[in-house]
Amino acid sequence: GRDDANGGWSGSARVQLADVSRPPSPRAPAPHPSRDASLKSDDGGDDETTTSRGVRAGWGDGWADVAFASLGQAAAASGFGIVVASLAVATERRTGSEAVGTLALAVEMFARAVASLPAARRANARGRREVIAHAGCLGVLGSLVAFADFYLDSHVLYFLGLALVGVANCVAQQLRFAAAEAVAPAHRPRALSFGVAGGTLAAFIGPEVAKATRGALAEEFAACFLAMAGLYAALVVFASRIRSAGPRPREATNADGAEDAAPGGDEASSLAWPSAELARSVNARKGLAGVTCAWTAMFLVMSAAPLAMTGRREGGHSFDEAATALQLHMIAMFLPGLLGTGDVVQRFGPDAVSNAGCALYLACAGFTYAAVPERTGYGGRVPLWTFHVLLVILGLAWNLTFIAGSALMLPDGLALDAAGSRRVQGAAESATFFAVGTASAVAGATL
Image 1 (tube, one colour):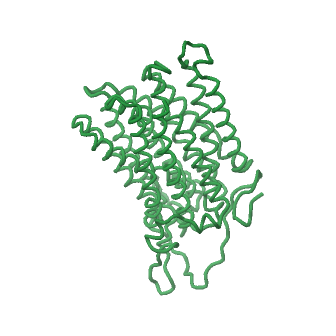
Image 2: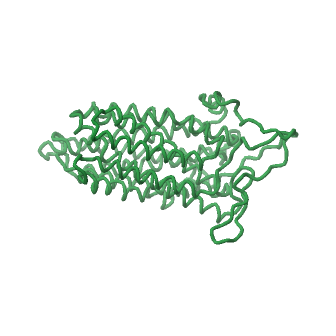
Image 3: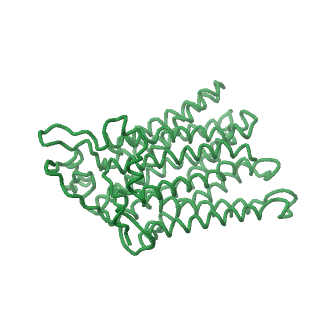
């Protein structure tokens, strides 16, 4: 059942996440609606109001926000799909170094890590919707800056553009939590899973766009970055359509009518590592570890896969074949969320689902060892189907581990207020992408 001492899950259970009740403060005023409370629905009828926590009171209305969050995830993940499919190969061909090829991915990931905690603070102050929309604008700018460097050939602008794209992709990770916050507590694991499932569209869009635009301009791969700019513009549109901004603790007022600061202190303290929250909640520590391991183990293999497939030693396959393999990988990453990973988490508990994901990672490692060219007898080359199987198993492992870890970090499982939950979520993103950036930098050197 639930671990009531930690306000969350313990082991496998057939229970649902529920709100953690907290006694009101004697000085606490009556809650007042957020600025989104009086919005009307698109059909002209009255919309359900937003509670003081920014969560939709109506089940159906909240799912409209889930749909837009999922579409935003599809747009952002499509941009990231182009990054994964083409960035390492494009950089390697521009610089002549495989190590620099994966270093470009590392720059994108380190930018995510640096932006994670400031983005969480900004979400506390302004709401997730505004922060995600602004990040999408940075994604457009970064894509255009990187595109310009194909013709300026300075490399400095190229990596600067990649850093801006990394910030956009970092903040887009909040879409899954925006989806979960839009619905009633009983439906949050499913909404979180649907928010992640938007990446299923990206599995078809991202690699296909990379293949179609690779040679569209005189500079190979330059058009890929123009396409990325369009996808991040779509992220801005979808994020702007999310009607609930989510919980904004700074909206609370004190007994004298003055506006209170966000829980957790001043802005500097909100940028600090949330040691108190992590010490207080077992689920916070488990969720952080789960999400970090899910991304790091997956990206260590995925970042090097295109170079390994197109390299002369191991693969000798074409860029289009490598993009198709990554397409299968992304389908395995995101499609299970649409088919019901959230329901599985709700049925068996996050711990059991996370353990299943870890078992798949071990299976992936065993399969990789068995597929060493010297063992397979394919003339020292790794056949295409081997990459397909490896990347599909890797994607499934990521889906189970990532969604289970994310479910542990919902406010209902952490027994923390909105500000504390977002600090934990921001810390998890920061730790994740520092680890992933390191893995990306190492991956190229191991080829």
